Amino acid sequence: MKDTLYLVIPCYNEEEVLHETAKRLLEKITNMIENEFISDNSKILFVNDGSKDKTWSIIEELHQENSIFSGVNLSRNRGHQNALLAGLMTAKDFADMTISLDADLQDDVDVIDKFVEQYYNGSDIVYGVRSSRETDTFFKRTTALAFYNLMSKLGVDMIYNHADYRLMSKRALEGLSQFREVNLFLRGMVPLIGYKYSIVEYERHERFAGESKYPLKKMIAFALDGITSLSIKPIRIITGVGFTISFISIIALIYSLIVKFFGNTVTGWTSLTLSIWMLGGIQLLCLGVIGEYIGKMYNETKQRPRFIISDKLIDIDKKDI
Ligand code: UDP
Ligand code: MG
Image (tube, rainbow, N blue to C red):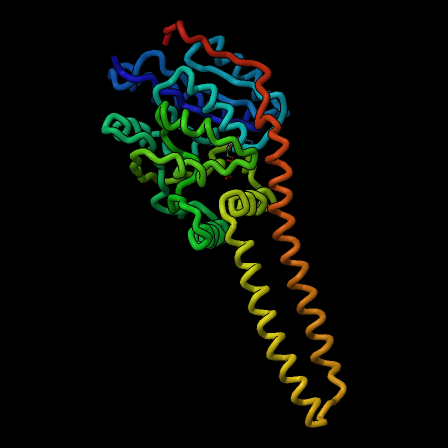
């Protein structure tokens, strides 16, 4: 008996791509079932992240046509990471393994077999890693690279060029379910689960229809979330800056006393204004960073639900593919 695979796809306003995506995924998964590579209980699970367009009704239609298409409807838009987690946590109860991918099929569907192969070879987590970023804009490529470098300097263990295209086994998902944080940054959290992992390379395509749901503003917020959710180094850096400046100010104090004793005091307007501005700036920055962490703690202590599911369309017994 082969293992059950659930493909988990978060969707936010994806009416333009959903039919095509469903068609291609169905082809793929049917093929794998026919080749007895995965069990015929396997499913394609769409998570509707509070879309404002027809996404959910398309998912309902698909489910009616073929029960291999399943759906989870969130009560409102919660963002990609929460939607993905909702899907994974739902799939965890039925699946032996899940593969998460985007609705726009930017992630190459043809490497799914390789993911599953690695799973059968004993990997609990298989990371999809982009072999090239040629389809990205220059801006996205350089900012992404800078972000990965920064994250690794801050001590966050992340797989280079891996987004959220990955396979996770049931026990890896159970591990993930024990992470209670509200500020989700899955690609930084999954390596913390442990277990054996492997990497599969793939080419990332361009979105074939519709627009990116990750504008620059969301990308920056996501990066900041990633840093402050997983690393406390920025706070340490602040302490370091504080120490250095205090040290410099002691030297400055000694220097100014000496100068005063020798009677060479001049009206030090320049140095005075400079130091007021500089120190003021640094203090505000430090307060900002500390505030960011306090804000996070505030959110975490509230322990609000990370998602609320309003409908579920999953028939586990029917096997009509
Ligand atoms: N997405 C989501 N909720 C959101 C934003 C995006 O579920 O609030 C989904 C979206 O439907 C897609 C995936 O997350 O399946 C990745 O989004 P997108 O392709 O727009 O991002 P990009 O590939 O441009 O980084
Ligand atoms: Mg995309």
